Image (cartoon, rainbow, N blue to C red; front, side, top):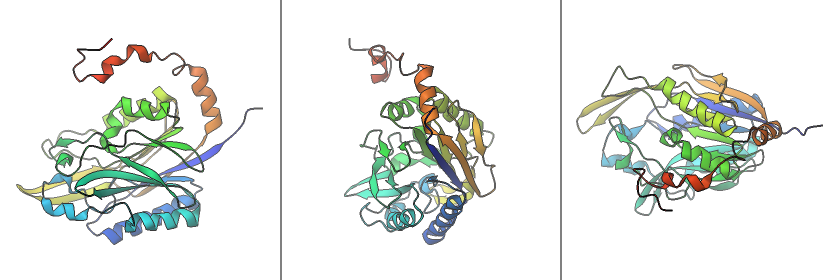
Length: 299
C-alpha cells in the first residue's frame, strides 16, 4: 500500500496600511484563521509590514530596514509559529551592515529560525524600483527542511524565472512558495499582468511536478515620489496550484482571503519520479544557461 504524507498549505491575502503594527496584527489574525482551517505551512505576502515603498526612490524609506537578529516582527512570528505549531515564511526589509536585502526567514513549527533567503532577481521599472533599495541576494536558491515538508521560497520577481523554481526542486523542494507584491503598472493603465503572472507559476508547478503557493496583496497604495504621487492597485489573485499546474484554490482581486489546500506529498513524489522530467534531464547540454546572451558557451 502506498505511503501517505498529508500537508495542508495556506496563502494569505490582505490590504496593507502604512502602519506596521496594524499590518502585523492583520497577518497574525489571518495566520490564526488558517491554522483553524488546518494549515501546516502558511504564506504571508511580500513586505507585509507596510506599503510597497518601491514605487519611489526616497532615501527616507531605508529607515524601515532592520537587522534580522531580534527583528520584532520575526520574533513575534516565531512565538506565533511555536504556539500554533505551524511553519511561517516571514518577508522583511533586511539591513546587514551597509547592505540591504529583500529577505525571507523560514520559521519552523517550533519557532526555530531555519535560515535566510535573499531575493535574487531585483526588478527596476516604473512603480517597482527595487534596485534603489535592495542589493542582489547572495544566498543562492535554498530549500528548508521544515517539520511538514522540504520547501523552497522565492520572492516576487523570482517567480518569473523557471531556473529558480528548477534549482529549488533539484535541491529537494517538495512545495514552492512565492510571497508577492504586484499590481497595476503606473506607466500603462491598460497593462494587466495578472493572468500572465499566474500562468508562469502554474508552469513552474507543472514542469517540476510540485504544488506551488503564491500570496499577493490587495488594495490601492499611493506613495509620494520624487516626481509626485505614484499609485498602484494590487490585484491579489493569490492562489495554490497542484503538481500539474492546476488551480486548486484562488482569491479574487479585492477581498481578504485565507486559501487552503491539502496535498499528499508521498503520492506526488511517486508521480514526479514516474513522469521522468528529472530522470531525463541533460545538465551537460544546459551550459548556455550560464551565459547572458547565449554565446561563448564553454565546452
